[in-house]
Length: 329
Image (cartoon, rainbow, N blue to C red):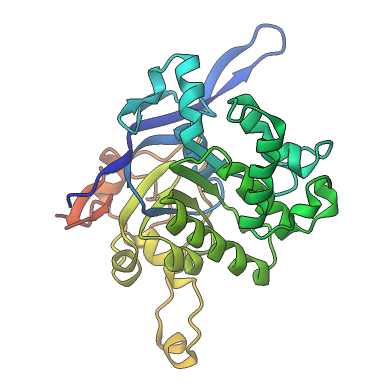
């Protein structure tokens, strides 16, 4: 495509050990939260990541940022391999990549003022020679995200949910990053506030040239804000492509089921639409099914799905990748 990849993720795995015993603990298994994930994020784009709760979306985002140490795989950010960077080099690189957390209250220290919360990364990375310049910059950031700088000495509990999320956004912007993981940034907010936060994120992306990995449950919101979308199921990406292409022509049965559950504001079209109903529960990531991870719930599974290794992610159509034995390139 000729676009430059800001982030390249290859073979990323994050397994959490399952241990047994109280005194002499030994590992008896592993929760495969992220299992061999591959994707790129291009400069200036928003890549959406969707899927059911527990599918590994948030763990992927945090492992990319090295908040979790990956079990295996490669994460190349701005041409640098993050998984092997020395601690000091990684600390310097963190200025260029930030995260907006899901819960706007739990992610803010209740004992710190808003000014202290936003300026903390500035102090850690010694961005300003004196406190006066630092405070002026913090006030500018607050104003940019829609907060009154007059509230700089207030505490998080004095703000609404939407305002607290704006504080989190200001903190993420403080070090002028190029890449931000937005980990379900609107799921804890009222619907009326969600649109305001999404519009703010879009405006900031245009203004500062940001690149987003946008993790979400709301499929209609993902279509509104994202350039491409990756669909995850049980720790793996099962479909990846341009947002309109994936939404208008979903190839994986799981993607088809997800999209069939999204309401359409047209009663005639809604009545004609065919629903894809999935049966059963999501398998445990500690004991994934043999063969394709989706075979226990797939409405179109066949023998190959139960015996062959998990299908690889292949380019079924230009720019449209899918992991399904029924779809051939």
